[in-house]
Length: 206
Image (cartoon, rainbow, N blue to C red; front, side):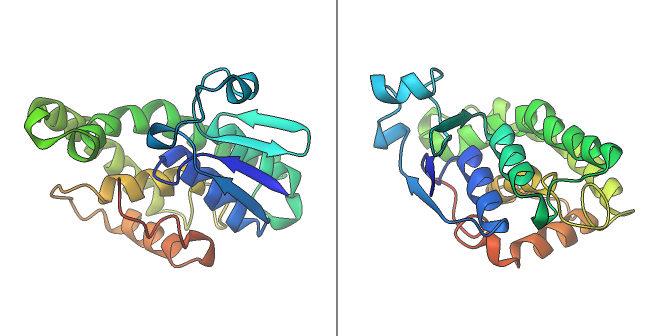
């Protein structure tokens, strides 16, 4: 059975759990990171020298980096259809996964940390404002993209949808005024209704 190390409050752990549930794979998740500790132990760092979550154990094979784990699981179970077989479709999906990690997450992260993880008296309002200013144009871009297709990489749900759905769960869970973005909302609401989203996209932020 797969073992996923990491607390479900982590967006990166949520990606892996959402992928495993979408693939209908049995797995065990072990809380690790922040208050749960574990990640600084020699045993854990021997498998993930970054001392971060998530960490995947698949038999004697271990893997870290959340989007890579999502790719691995989807590629290992191609019959589920989440890993595009056509080369262009696959790299279209890859592109959006990389964009989530390098662009969207970088823009949105500060607002999350300030509003959820930082005590109110220590918050930096300017950091929140800057994060919103950086994120909202990216969401407008996503909205325009999803006006022309059902899912991130075309007509079907693929690995590309998983990281961005987790990102939207985090962003729309923040106590902010959120512009409507109707196409993005339609896409996200559809993913939230999937059985795989239970215990992932229906959780409060922490």
